Length: 284
Image (cartoon, rainbow, N blue to C red; front, side, top):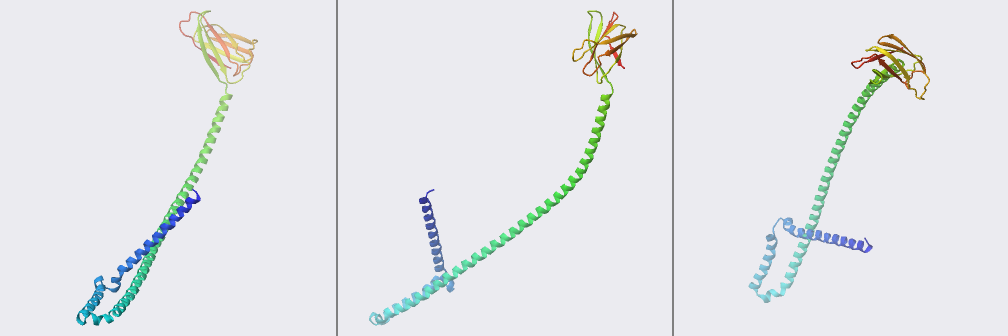
């Protein structure tokens, strides 16, 4: 927006303000004029009647004494009469304008005071409402703090219980890890070189030497053992010993049986084997 535009806007605002003041002045003058009968406790007819009566009396004097006799003093009489009447009504008009202005002022003061009282009452209500909200929030915060303190104590107890359970679980895991465990994974049955079953055995601890007893549901012809080492070691020493017709003892001296080196065991059965055989292994 340029300076010229600002100048035009300021001039327009000044003109609007000037016309607004003129409108208020005109309104005051009209109301003062209309207030004259009320100020006199009369009506417009009561105000106009003396003027009309005076004019009629002059007309009656002309008719009674003649125009020549009345004309000598008519101008002076009319001038004096209307001049006094004009001064009286002018003063009356000014008094009406002052009274209306004072009345408007008092009305404005009264309305301003009423609005101020309403604002004070509303402000007090808002302060009371804010104080009530603060009080309510304070009580709620206190209740929440107490609740949190109680829950904090409960959480502490739960944490202690969880820590104790975790310690028990850790102890159980350690104990389970220390207890030797053997897992058996049976392979497939092959009939090529006679009936046999192959098994993969794992352990959770290092065993050396290894003594395994294989007990099967069918008579055992022979058994074979081979360690599956990570480095592919081919040198190992083992010894099979028959215990019963259905049991064989397998002893491994080297290498050690470890969790990373399972054992591959093949059990050959005495034919015929008419159903799926099964074997169990006991490690010492």
